[in-house]
Amino acid sequence: MSISSEITRITTARDNAFDAIEDKGVTVASNATIDDMAGYIQSINTTPSLQSKTVTPKTTEQTVTADNQYYGLSSVKVNATPLESKSVTPKTTQQTVSPTSPNIGLSSVTVSATPLTSGSATPTASSQTINPSSPNIGFSSFTVAATPLNTDTVTPTKSTQTVTPGTGKVGLSSVTVNPIPSNYIDTSDSNASATDIVSPKTAYVNGTKISGSLVVVTYRTGSSAPSSSLGSNGDIYLQTS
Image 1 (cartoon, rainbow, N blue to C red):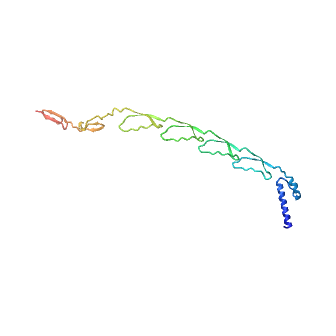
Image 2: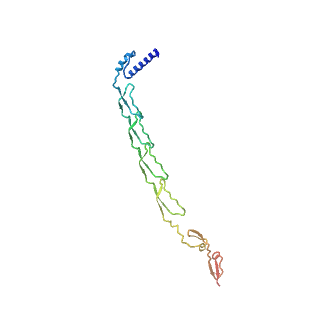
Image 3: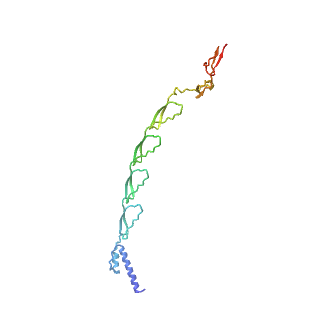
């Protein structure tokens, strides 16, 4: 080993030793020599130097360590968790309530009363969809008016009648049917036929109109010849002696 390399080795060892002394909190002069090393070593504080730190909670894990010039931590102060209180109003859709930065949580959430309104409707002939007025999201109460009905009166006729509710009404609460008019006669018990009815008369039998086919012949008698104006065509005249 040469003298030059040995000097380099000793110089490097000296510098490393002074760096280690400075790491222990002792300031080493720039012109210090190996002869000064013992004094610097003796000035090293052998009582551990500890550090106190303060941290604030976060949403992720934190590792708290002492800075390089300290042996460790004498204390760690953890600040109160940064929380926030919020208020929300119910909606028809889902809501996610999150804290605003730098807060990491919610200390409380105040939910306002659900915005409701009262509603009403009157029944109609067709279906109705009633929605609450904005910003309300529902009904606290809903009043359904009485169904608008009317009464009606009809008199029987020979043809079919359809009775419908009047304007603005959706149904009939009652329908009064008057008695059958006197000009309508029940003929269901009749038993005459066309041959029972004198032609050209007509009659209704069991609800059907029948034209008579019976021909009436008049018989007349006299002692002399009849005049041409006597009776009707088809009459029979018997002359007696």
